[in-house]
Structures are given as structure tokens and as C-alpha cells.
Length: 253
Image (cartoon, rainbow, N blue to C red; front, side, top):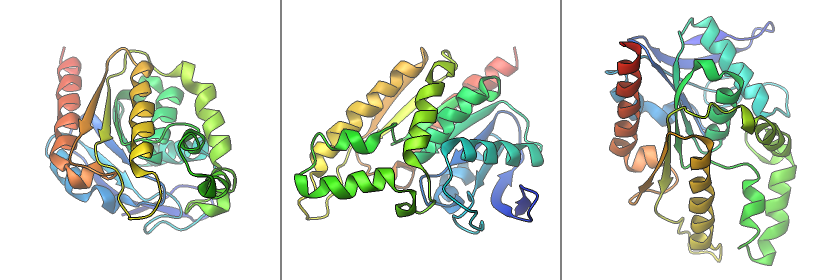
């Protein structure tokens, strides 16, 4: 389905299944569309309302002028939820860069957030943390990817987005259930890219997400690369269903 989300005739494509609260909102990684969630969404739709969508410039949704920031993506999602009249509370499931969007949404709308599931999620200033282990020949390209929005598929201003998330960090609801799912396998492409060192950096960075909530836990997906919801969908489904059940019990008391 498609719904217009601004006054200029532009629309967002989405997959929505209405069932019951809480609604589970799937937020894709940079450049990915809602199809990335197909198998997981179909399963979760048997337990709760679900929404997956193509952000502007991904999948079937038309591009909008850039650069854009993480705050723009939060507001785009908020408008979509309002237009579809999807009632809060929401369990936000964010993959990769989508984890940053989920976190900022929770900071902006804590009363609408029932839980957060981060799937191999990016941390703020991720590219700078890589530089601790990158060989010299990769530094310039890595820094350019951080600083130049035209080099990523959605023209996201990463530095501005990271500053937004860092500034909002104190507004994160401190008791919100938070599940941090982290991949266990390094990227292997045969190059001199330090895949195992990068994996260690990312696992440590994601462990620091646990400080965001007093109700947090980390799960290592030992058989998964970056797309845990493709490699071990059952693990992701179980984490989401556990959060749905906990929230449903709370709603019924």
C-alpha cells in the first residue's frame, strides 16, 4: 500500500497488518526496504499488529531532496503512524542504521514506546570507532563516507544525525525493555579489510547500548552476519514475541 506523507504528493510504501496492541514497527537499515522483514513480519503478524515501510528513496518510495537527518526519518515515521492511525504503544525493531532511528524515536516519543529491539544496530560515530583498527589505506574513504551524505544510498547526513542522537540520549526512557541482538560472524570477503577486528569493535559498541535502559539484555547471534533477521530469523522472532507478551500482560493489568 502507499500513503501520502507530505503536502507535495509524495508517498511511502508500507506493509501493515492490523491485529492487536502493541504494534511492532520494523525500521530497516540504510538503503533497505520493507521486504527485508518479510519472513519475520509475517510471523509476528500472528501475535501483534505490524508495520514495515520503505523510507523515502528506498524500495518503492520515491526519493526526496537531501541531505536528510535521523530526526527527519523519525518525523517521517511519526507521520506515517498517525496517517495509518496505528495506536501506541509501539515495539520498535531497528536493524543497522534503523537502530539509530528507533532510539531517537524513543527519545522523542517515550510515552509511545513499549520496547526496543536492536538488530546489529549502528552506534553513533560508528565510522570513527572503526578507525581504531583500520589500515591506513582505508581511513580516507571511511572518513569520507562519514562526512559526505551523497556517498550513502539515502543521502543521510551522518554527522548531524549522530549529534542529534547524542543530544537526545538523556531523554531515553530508562525503564523501557531493550533487547540488543548482535551478530557473531565477521564479514569475510578475502580482502585486507580487518573483518574480525571490526566485529570486536562492533560487539563492544553494541554492549554499551545496555546502559541505555535498566531493562536491557544482549543476545549474540552466533551463526549470523549483519542481517541477523535473515540468518537466524527464529532468534529475532523469539525476542520480539517475548517483548510482545510482556507488554500484553502489562496492558491487561
